Amino acid sequence: METIDVALIGSRGVGYLHPHFDAKEQTFEESVDDALYQRVLDVNGSLVVMRIHDLQMRANGSVNWFRLEEADAVFFFYAADADDTFFDLLDQMNVILAHCKPGALRFLVGTRADNAVTVTSASGQQLANDIGAWFAMTSINSPLSIERVFFSAANTVIQRRSGVEEEDTAEVCKSDCVVM
Image (cartoon, rainbow, N blue to C red; front, side, top):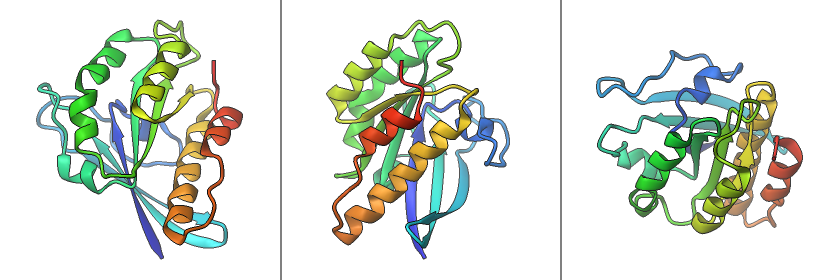
């Protein structure tokens, strides 16, 4: 059984909110440890363990660099209804990217898209383009969309490892996520 490591940055408990993950609520206090969620996925008939490391960004902008450097896919999250989360992520982006594994898939995900949006999808898309990431907007009312993006990331990692031509992950993000 293959294992895929995924790192979440700035999620503020996305894993906790997702109905298929069972974990404690996350905070941004220095004393809080990073969370680990594990899922077993059926990817094209093969079982794959997806280890999702929900990395807590500390007040100084640091995260668990080792987990980030080992991740096959990195998800950067911000709340579309709170521009401070976007700018906090933006301020630390160069340092975070410097610690990403070469060739790791990158996803920028704006959450809370069903609320009054203060960070436009155009701003999110521009940042995604700048960092070479796929972009999606999701909401708690569409929890399957983020699950689909996780599945798509797992599928793409497996395809890359086996040398198979990749499915267009960007199209999955566009078709299965709430993109505004």
